[in-house]
Length: 167
Image (tube, rainbow, N blue to C red; front, side):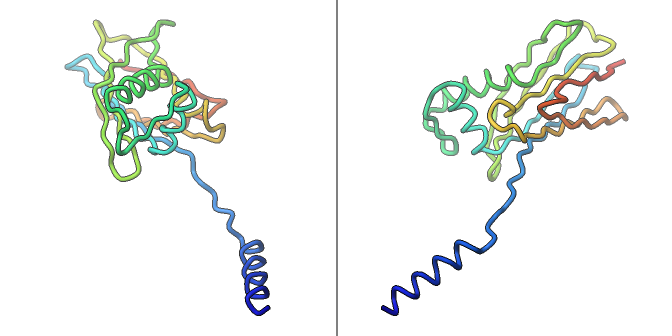
């Protein structure tokens, strides 16, 4: 009988304890315009579990990141996902965002991409919808460095495209 009351007490203690923890849904990207190379080099950081869930949702697969269940397949899917959700646009044309690679740092996937230009445009648009298809509360912080000028943008499901000047 004592055990029953102890279990009951423990049940109500757990039930009425405030366990509402708010998880932040955020990714960060840092991009640098390298004029000499006619390129924008991008480093994006995305929480492993969020990217894993988005990949499984988008590609109807059961993948495991860190450690990878299938490295070659995951590289391909991450490349496609980043290419579809982090776009650089010049005069309405989507530029090729080249996937260079990725690595795990703690609980984050760090992705490396690069956009190359034949000639440097005056401005481009950046569209960042990373994880918006998976988490509606997602926010994507994007820092852009052009020489001494640095601009930061906050992308969300409603504001997901911004223009940046290169010249």
